[in-house]
Length: 301
Image 1: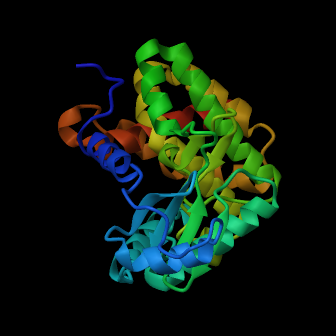
Image 2: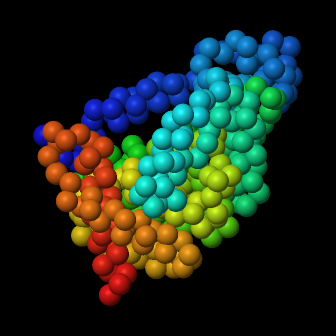
Image 3: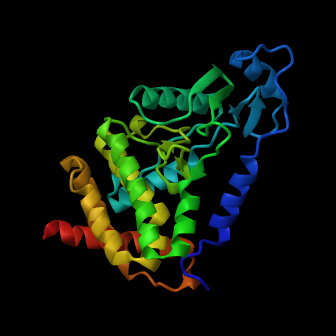
């Protein structure tokens, strides 16, 4: 078995996302003029069964997100308790109420990030229960999710894997340099655009509603590490630790201290069993703790 191959739930989730991203077989909204995004949203929204789907509007590919059911709060209370017990504010849950509130949050965050000069989908039209946004592809060329690029690079060897992984590190650093933060900075929410620039997607929640900017940015770094650590641990843990150290060398001291605190608090997790029989969640936590531990020791030196 190839230790670098992602499988199980992660592979199934990516397959589902890939299927959902196929353009829906819908034509322009009846009676809508070219470029009349608001009318297209108004007419198409009630016809769309899925919460998120892409459509062809003239020569454009657009994405329509409709308000789903509101989310309960019980799960957030459990996660908040776990974060308090661990003493890690940066992993405390970010409320995502779903419904119309999530639509409003995503529209607001996309506009904020776009105004900062970052590559995000453009808000084309908005109403309380739906959002129409642009696709980050261009001229018929599609984007590639960074998660997929990392998987492909892993098959080519450690050097290729690290090269792609570092692109994600640079993309997160670019966001922070603009004084901004992401929402869920996992590799599945970073996409390479046709011109090579990394873009950002998925903003239904806003960590700044419950965290300081420093906490939000530390959360971005830890989220990216969480989504990639298993691949790195299997391929090139020592080199990954060095690259992580280099990436964080110019990070705001307040952010670095929060990441260092996470490394200290998670030190025990380095001793979790490596066997796959303990489940992928255990392996992922162990890999994150080990890479953070390497960085922490380098940081103290």
